Length: 370
Ligand SMILES: [Zn+2]
Image (tube, rainbow, N blue to C red; front, side):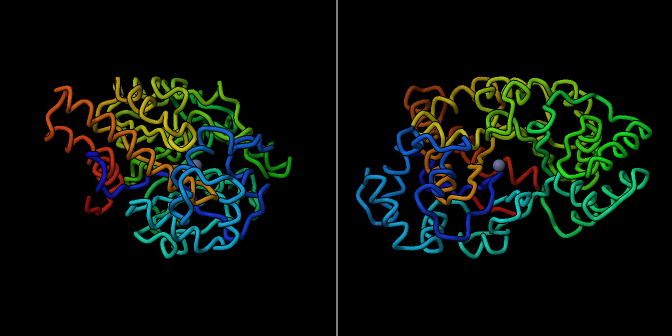
């Protein structure tokens, strides 16, 4: 396949769990549901047995019991090093918003390649509140905290506003007085989980402004995710006003995941020149159907807007399958287009290296050899 030897840049993933897991612990991380519903009996489960089992020196399609027994025998560190190290990914961009997983330095030691931090806006705002701040100081304190963290070398910013109040963001940030009043109300209630529509709108606009100033893309979770989400509020089409308002600001907006709204996301990338798209998370979860999802994304998404991400989280199987299934899906699709005369081999090579690494490296300013 044309994608066989490509070294990928994973635009968005998380660290891995640093402990051995029992069956329930493993299956809880192999589903987006809060209660696992036999995830081995799904497209993702099939892919684990088909593709990850041979990586652990088991035959393809080993049973779930055999797989988990081998995992226990090897231990989390050896399993993680093996699955991450064989994924063909040279650069990982890690969302560090969830503290218990491996941080970028430890992750790079396990996985090989280099790992960079993507900073989650909501986590910083919640940390500022937890440290104690008045409503009057809140906006300035959050901006200062973000600038301090940016100075440590983060390569991108991220918001999970889709999980909180949804993606229907206003074109303009809320006024200062409105932010102060909302901060007062939120802080009075303890200031833990940031779920104020006003503060989140303000925060995402702040992220876009700082992103433009520092040349950092702003990643937005869109589409499916865990049960905390309300799917109808995570449709990237809801971002239309925000994208229209930021199109000339200099910031790049990366729409992560997108499924099942990946066609809507493709349209947004088509009309807004500052939009990147990927179908991370969906790639491991839809398993062998990944080529279909990618083909739908490519119906309208300009080729220089498409990136790869795994959204691997907790289990190194998800990072490994994200890369493997993506490579297989894109490879089969593009190989068929070359065979049918839809595109030349030279075009195909340019396009797949763009998806794999060039597009993301250009926008994030990464120095990557494909
Ligand atoms: Zn994620």
